[in-house]
Length: 485
Image (tube, rainbow, N blue to C red; front, side, top):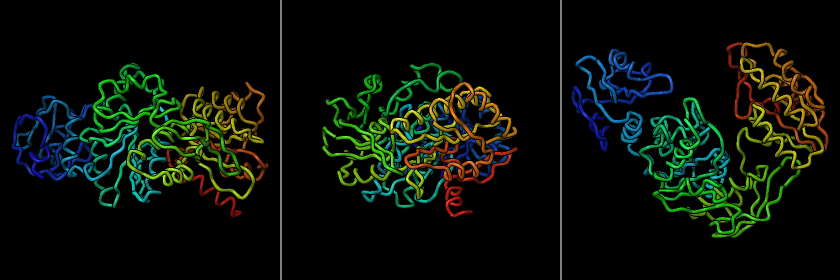
């Protein structure tokens, strides 16, 4: 593609060289530059890409996109723009021929619930026969293909490439977690979303390099509703009007508030061996009874968000009901089938706050016993281990202390730190250092009505020990244990 084609719709100044230069790809990591690519200089938390402009030129870049002045050889085109992040998004959309126009695009922002809501929408759409790709905390998922990503919302180039891949593989919809940082740093620019969802707003990501204060954090989330056609908004959240102030989209609301377009009432917890969920009555623009296969009252809000967008898309009540009844989120209170009359869950909770949230939710189901298996990461602050031990000791009937990603520390040293926290409670515990052995202990000693949660690994499929990541998927370990291996 000619550089001028990639720059279509972008205001720029040609500092040197020609916009007719042929470009084969866009690169924003100078280590990946090759002949006839265009290097886009991004400014990050700690690194400024402009410092690597001359290095990129030496490696064969045919053009460099900058917002600051750089000194590089005469044979390389230099294009100056106001904001290189915004430019990367628009150039990437041009490079991949604007794939968003060939998909129904749905973006979700909010402090909590993004990953679960993505899974709910995907489950409903696929029940309706609409193949969907997703981008978020769990990576890029297209059919059976799973691509790991470094950020909840990847850089705009990866987003645009993923959408083109989705179109190529027959997807009709794309659902993405639009983090506040992703919105702030233009990672979802050049997309006019068909639907934007606001789940909720609470304290998170404040200070340091991410957001200077809560006001900026809120304003970054609100940016989504200036780049979508329809906003699906949690009316029960006290910030909902601030989020939608100046919005350039139609507004649809959800919540327990009866004036919401999609409202919930009569919510109750559902519990049977192997299934924990919630049920409620849907009112407003649609009326039906809904069962959701994810535990906790909070799941009602995520389900309402999914119902709102899917209803506006014209999905039937039957497909919505089936999608929510069968939804599962990898590594988020994910049930694993077992032959006994108890419930076994895998969850990503790996700090005291997330552990508190999941265990408090599971306590509401009045289990015979709540058993928590967990470890703690090595080469991390010891206070986290104390806090996790204290939280599990307080909320669990039994803690099974084992390994997590021990990294360069000795597993037994980490376990001793966890025991310091548990000692502040009267909680019972056992120590089983090997994680597979610990899972086997839980299964072998399970009693009717128990809820067992394997905390810490979630969607991860590795164990990090002494600088090496070894393959380890808890689902596979459980299967081996049940087969007697």
